[in-house]
Image (cartoon, rainbow, N blue to C red):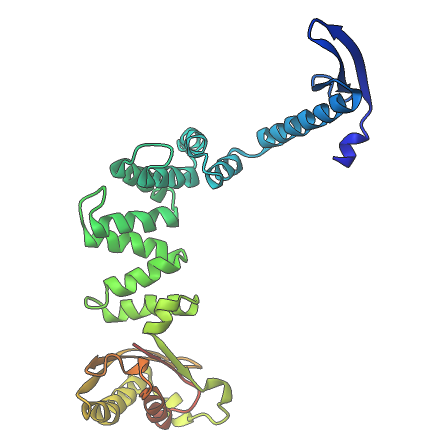
Length: 300
């Protein structure tokens, strides 16, 4: 307001059947005027009109996507719809946002089939959020026929592009079908700070404190390393868990400077890592005896 008050003004005093008054306009904005019974009133009115004019000009100069997002945030859904609809011919973000409006019925009538069509068009342009939404629609049979294989494919595309929720979805979707793939995606999500994945996956490692390495183990072929660890799981870890009617599955092994060992609890011990009597310490200790401290253990 202070900067605008510094603008040079012109004014006219007028009289008509309705009474006397003032008209004020600015040198730099001659089309913006203010009126009032006094010069001060007219000047204040002109300033208010100028602020409104400048705001409108700024909005018009903003990119259309920004205008649409602001309109949506302000719940002016019809304006958001009009802009995204005009951009959805080629803009993948607009396709996804427009599809979301059709899902929610905001600014347009709900139409799940139309939303699925828009998400599919965005997916063809590599849009990860469109893939995630379409995966959910195929998983639940909303707007499209229910198809878990399609859901898997769309979630995998989104997950591969870094969509954390899709990574968790894949982990859950694949847990009975492909344990290794399920663990892979849950581990990715856990490292991406997803709370649900971190509840499902336990990460244990003393690698930062490792000072002495087991050169005998580390010079073995990868298959021999795997067999050594499988023997520890079968002869030491599994019997210890069997006492409580639990079990363990050796899911995967990744060799390297810091080897990774992936295990999954089974039976009555499927929730062991969540309890106060966690078996994780026992398991990591037994594995470290076979290798050394420079390892990583993932438990599911």
